[in-house]
Length: 334
Image 1 (cartoon, rainbow, N blue to C red):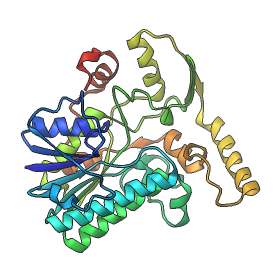
Image 2: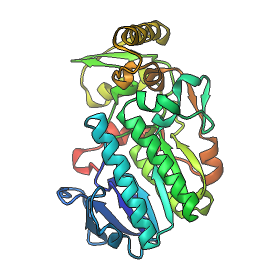
Image 3: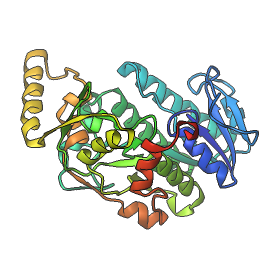
Image 4: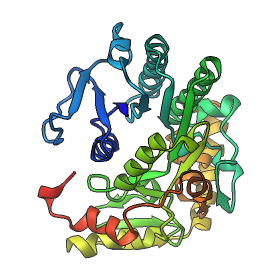
């Protein structure tokens, strides 16, 4: 199969390219003209296409003879406006290019950020309510962009009878993104505040995530599906924050703060901010009740639909993921 991968030089993208190539697929990577690919280990079998998704009038030429597009490209940093513009405009242009080139299969990388985390408790699955109305624009540029990206993809698939798969990963971790503070708690030197230390983490190791995307490309059962992607390992925040110093032999002090202790502070600060500064004030996403809930509320995360549809199990066990992240020699870095 001939597969084009956008955002191929990113943290997830380079592992997706490796997973597809190792399975014998012909891979074309779409990266920006200025992107540096040195050190990515792409051999001659990887075809490199340089293009700016936002503005290239010849974008459709890079989709010639492509069977499937894996769309990973999204702006992860910058202002809310720039993240929305880069992610949504790029997706609009990609959809137009697919239509022009006649490519009908799209696998979209979405995000847990599209969910309305203020409306959940217990176990999270694909039936959790999505952001809607004005709430979409109050949750930060990334959540807004990913919500619109999904809408664009679904609209295009319906209008043009495309084969669409949407995969919503949880927190993607691995070497280079070992312990995201967005779901652990803030750090100050060797001291780490661990919020709700006993909760299950909605994590997928980057190697497991890449394998899942490759499986979705190969398995026709994924067509028309929306799938949450988490490994399902019984990994808690307290355990993860302890593994890094244990395996790297670096000292660290962990301080456990229960969720019930922090939640009233977040809620009070949010309400005071809206009272003083107005109802449409934008705070950092983690300071918003829904954003804080997404990162830190004690929940369980179901892998049932992913397992039923794809028959997928993470190739890296929890121990293997920890080894790959913390103890693998740097020269083997992926």
